[in-house]
Image (cartoon, rainbow, N blue to C red; front, top):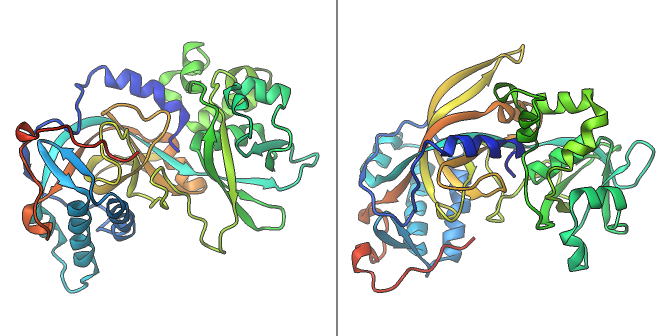
Length: 379
């Protein structure tokens, strides 16, 4: 799940941007496209979006003045997958420009998130003392704040694993899922299961408001460094974020630990993005243009412009409104280094398949002629 300190950035950034609805009519134009990853990973990600639209075949998605069924989107994405699988056909840029139009290009703040790997244990010890919990059985426990859970330990009996560092535990909550490295070398995936329903607060924003960090220097690394250097302030600052995450523990096949997004499908590094489902339909394909961090051996950051096809396959507490996008960076420290510094301006445009690509009877009608409101997309 997306990074916690990004909410305050979104609040500042969104003040300069106009609002949109994905049902809003907007000029659709041909899109010249050059994918910076040369389409690597797109097939994997797009299969998951196609499968999602298969399950929503009868649902109508109102996009930029046009109404498309889930079946039409599934068929269009199958056509892309067929093209990607054809190794003899190299001109994918031309294929996209001829068969898709871009819809409602929107300026937004682009951030990054990742899947951390933390040392832990399935049993408590002097080293491993900070528990992960499954969702409680009693509904009232879900209303408890972070401070109440940490201080009063009302969830005894719901422990599923233990971490050595309380900041590791907090950042695991923020990311929404993570990998636990056990003492014997095996791994478990701690996947998001539920939350306590309390409000989310960015502790990055808290640190700025209290004058403890400057806005320009806030990142995952700077927040961790500050709290490690001021342990007497740690709990007070962390407890500002009352949102508490519950997990389920998966035992995957070796080499197949795959974090999942809000669609319930595995995330694809560099392709899956988290967005607000009330503004962008889950599963939709679009074009992202922004700048990405490139880290050298000394962890110095350079920025490189890019244009890339991405799919909306996740959501998060800090990702609200039409002007926020969180790009999934991958697993481990290297991905975390990139995610921690990613906060760039960008643009995102939904891609609408042309009639020739849908291979089924078109259900497109003008939004002005729709007699009733379309069903809301699945969330």
